[in-house]
Each structure stands twice: as C-alpha cells, then as structure tokens.
Length: 291
Image 1 (cartoon, rainbow, N blue to C red):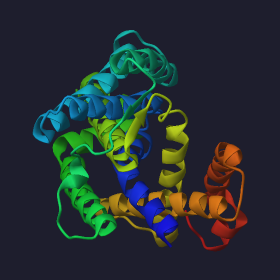
Image 2 (cartoon, helix red, strand yellow):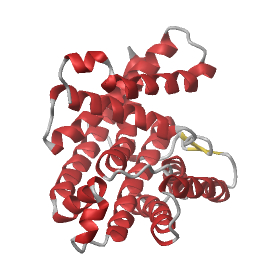
Image 3 (cartoon, rainbow, N blue to C red):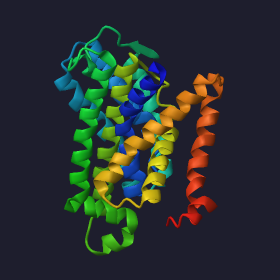
Image 4 (cartoon, helix red, strand yellow):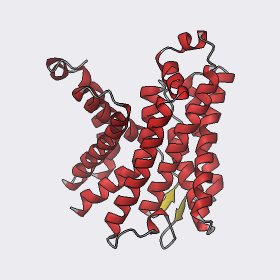
C-alpha cells in the first residue's frame, strides 16, 4: 500500500508540470519540448539553493524565473527567428542539458537531511504531511491558472491557440502572447522538477529525460475524462489533470509491482501513452457519442 501511496505523492509533485503541458498543448496549441530541460533546470536550481542553505522564500522565485527564462528562449527562437515550434523546443532542451550539468558540476546532488518544502510539519505523519502540502500548492496553482485563463490575457492566449491568424487580424500581438505563455508554463514545469527533487531526495542530470512523455500521458488521460463526461468548466478541466497524473503513476506503479523489469518501464510508458492517445478515436468512444 505504501508503494502506491508513494506513487500518488510523486504524481502530485508532477502535477504542476502536467498543468503546464496541458496549457501549452490543449490551450495554447504549442508543442513545447523544452519541458525535458526546464524540468531538470528547476530541480538543479532547487538543489543548489538548498545545498547553499538559501531560504526557501528566495529559492522559489529563482526556480520560477529560471523556468520562465527557458520558456522565453524557446518562444524567442520561434517568434523572432521563425524556427519551427517543435525544433525551437528541442534546441533549447538540448542546450539546457549542458547548462544544467555546468550548474551542478557533477551528475547528482543529494538533498537528504536538508530543509525542504516538505520539512514544514502540518501533521506528525510524514506521508500525509507531504500529501497536504502538495495538495495546498496544487490548489493555489489551479485557482491562479483558472483566474489567468478567464482573464483577457487568458482569452487571448486561448484564441491564439484556436486561430492565430484571426486573433492577429484583431490587432493582438501573438508573439508576445507566446513569449509570456511559454514563460508561465515552463515556470510550472521547473517548479514541478523542484518538488520531485525534494520528494525523492536528490537531483540527477538525467531526471528530465523523457519526462514530457509522462506528462503527455497524464494530460491525455485527463482529456479522455473531460471528453467522456463532457466537462466544460475550466477549473474542473484543471482538476482533471490531477486525476490524469495520479492514474498514470498508479498504472506505472502497478506494472512495477507485478514484477515487470524496470528496464522496460520507458517502453511500457510509450505504449501506454499510445493507447491513451488512440482511445478517443476508438469505436468505444464513438459508441458513447463523445465528440
């Protein structure tokens, strides 16, 4: 049971990243691969700050700014240099690997016996304490994102994703929208990397490799739930991300618990994501009249 509880706690730490991926893909319609690099960047900045005994009130803004800078770099390459969106993310992601390794100075930084977000004690039980802290953080993020997406800027961002040519004809600077939007989403991704690093007790240079696939899988599960129950409320859509990421991590935990070789985990993850992506187009969905 503790194994599955740990999977849920890790899923909650992944939730900010999945919220960022949801906004870029489903709201912003931008295939951002910067995630792999900005996720690790957030963990690296967090580890360096904690290792140097900086207060958390200083570390958090630096984490958010570092992720924002990664997103801004991708957006500038795409908007100013007219590079394909996917390629822009790949270029920044590749560059961030060297940046992260240079910042760390080694491949791994341990965080055990260091003060972290989870050091704040709400209740004596350690696992429930982590659960309450992550739920509190996620609740604040969902309320903030719900307000953002319903604001004038959020409506312009959603319109940019739906029909960029139309919104540009109305005088909206879509380049600025993309720059700010990617800054926000990559801040979320970096913050998620920091949470996971503190939860697992170390930061590793390879912890972000393939993380976008896990995030995509969780988002697609959430999208399936949204389409199945025809949820239109933005705040409920964001809440479905929590369901998606928890289900995704529980499936991975189940495959490990039944004795599947851990070396095959990435293969199983890819196959599971493929299944989730193909599910909305299946005859089962058509039978339910889900559009």
